Image (cartoon, rainbow, N blue to C red; front, side, top):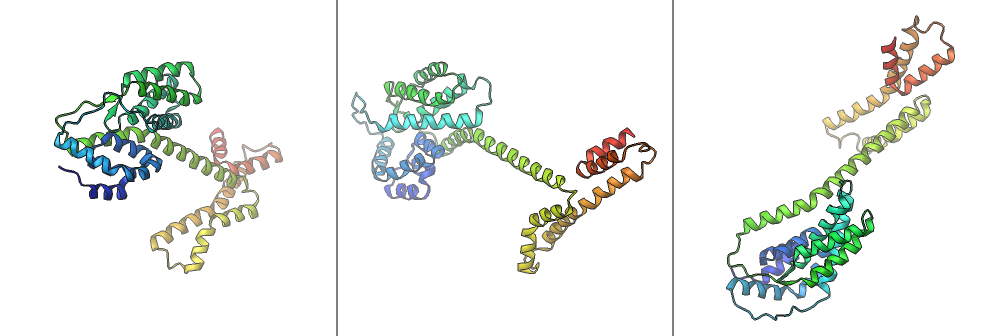
Length: 319
């Protein structure tokens, strides 16, 4: 199908950073590059505004299978090796953030990630490169800078230089894959890129939330022996609820949400009473075991039972 320049500009405007116009023109490598870098970090997407007519012309030439005379010597443009270096560093940073705990990371994973980033840029348009030579240069450089995060930069430089030296024209393909097969491959490639970093973000967020929750719980447990401090902290934590209730008169809350907030409020308010009751049970309900124990020990045990119910449970099991 002949490609339309108008449709290309519309897709560029609506989904350019995601590479929709490149998918339309059959430039899958360029589309994937835009998907993982969000339009070349925004700069490449804007720069393409003046190059879309050329892209459409090349796509129509491929569709009509018109033979063109190519220069035996590829023209050298600084933008391609620079883009290879930038994307190589970008892929290396993503690998460092998400995959660095893996064994053999600096000798295997890091050079492989950088090689894929460099080769992705090299494969844009009508040109490509020798991925084996690029990977060899990356692995050799990774040995020299083994174990150093700064290795991302020299590996990217070497991979970009080697890739530039081995660039050549793509071999024409007589049969073109249908759109569903192309989208399937692009989806798999995008998932392979995003899954490690997504796991890293989810894991770090979960750990951070757990740490904050544990810290708040520890602070609340530590001030139970000071009722006024405990009441102040509970009031601060419930301030959004009280503010909303005063400003709306409770009308803005649904019945179910109101019940949940009331349960939370009642649970927090009952913690002090429950732990005091448990402390009294230790002193009152176990008089035989506590005979002969110094009063300071009783006081210490009562205070600990306010803080840590697990201590109380352990003491009950012993007695």
